[in-house]
Length: 395
Image (tube, rainbow, N blue to C red; front, side, top):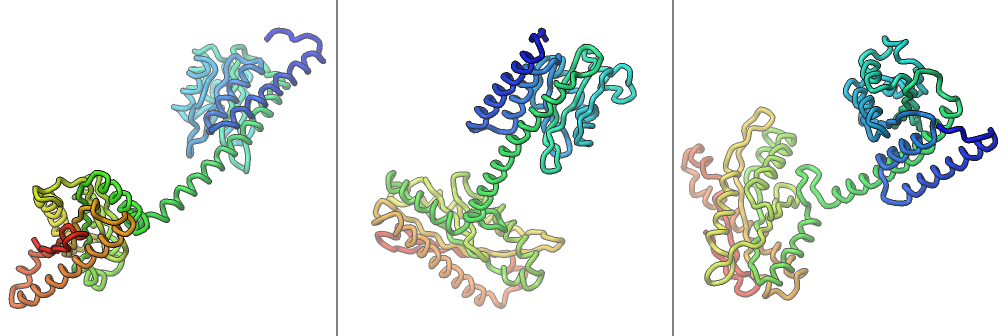
């Protein structure tokens, strides 16, 4: 570093440079900054202000330190060695939460053998590591490298610690902001998703269905809503306990998600009731939805639901009753009114399907239990074009 002149002039120059660094930090923090932005600014400031030949800065990532930025190729190489070995002055500064200085790496080879060899190969023979400490934790480490062995200037080390303290304040601000944002996201997710299965809950289902109805109205496309209730779920709970029942509900959610298309919505209303919203199904030749496309969706759901599930060491089997409302939303009065109507109609259709299943179960009372168990979830009730005709058929 060039001689800045008399001591008073040198102090004034240093103070001016520090003021500029603080302005740079403030400018960085005024935008949508993150922790890495702050640490890069710290490394750049240290390289400009201090009598060193290289600067590196690492951020804590769990139990490890990860390189964020280095001012030179040699410093980057030395930092990457520390990153790989998780050994060196950076690690020691992190563990001790105190300044670590080695004025002559070659004279103390045993301290960090592999790091010292690699640093020397890069022409670096002295190092000082300054931890970023706040709230009793180390958030990062600033490494200062010199090509020649010898003591670091005391003023430089003090300046480095001041820079680290300032940067750490901004790191904490970024951390707290990100934590608050994640908390808000978790709260928003909890308000719209079922905590057990992770599926959309009733609130999100109604919102998505309203959007689906509005979209279908604009396009004049049919829309299908499948309302499902598990047959035999209470028996699973009573026989094997609520833990197995909960595992079954999670398994059902996974199976339904795999059975429908990516663009379809699968939701859990509560208990053992699930809803699937199918948009953009192909239209039939006489209007409404294509019987083949709807039949394919129902067949896939039946296929995944009739397979037994092994949960917590026990095998369970349930059936499913499905009520389907197929509608032409372009004929509805409003999306909001139509959402309530289509859900109510699909729910009623599901109960008709369940009632017929019980009636048929009574008719089969004389069959072997094994024969009855091989036909779970056979009942589906479909309401076609409900806003106009209310016509009903059971496939």
